[in-house]
Figure 1 (cartoon, rainbow, N blue to C red):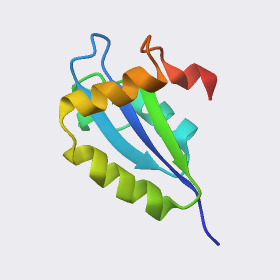
Figure 2 (figure 1 turned 120 degrees about the vertical axis):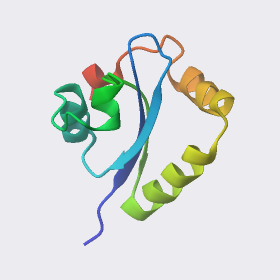
Figure 3 (figure 1 turned 30 degrees about the horizontal axis):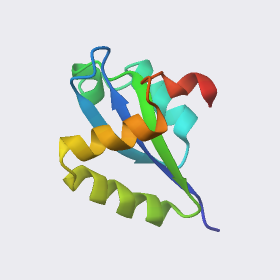
Figure 4 (figure 1 turned 120 degrees about the horizontal axis):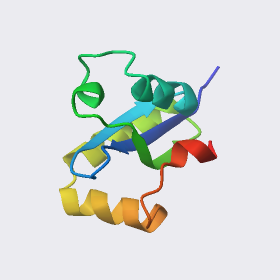
Length: 96
């Protein structure tokens, strides 16, 4: 059985830190970030609790490939992707 996947970007309240991740369950994973389930994780340490971008794929492998690509991007490219999808940088978690 194949599972879909999602690559996503989280940020902090003042948008100075970006975190890119991948998951097969976006709602559950973002909930974990928001609840700081793993207190020593990057997102917990830097207060990345705002979902500002995501892309879904039919296969988790595709999402992993995209995550690896995006992690190599310049910051300006990441900002462009976020601004294109979510110009007001709203927390998209509320729309899931």
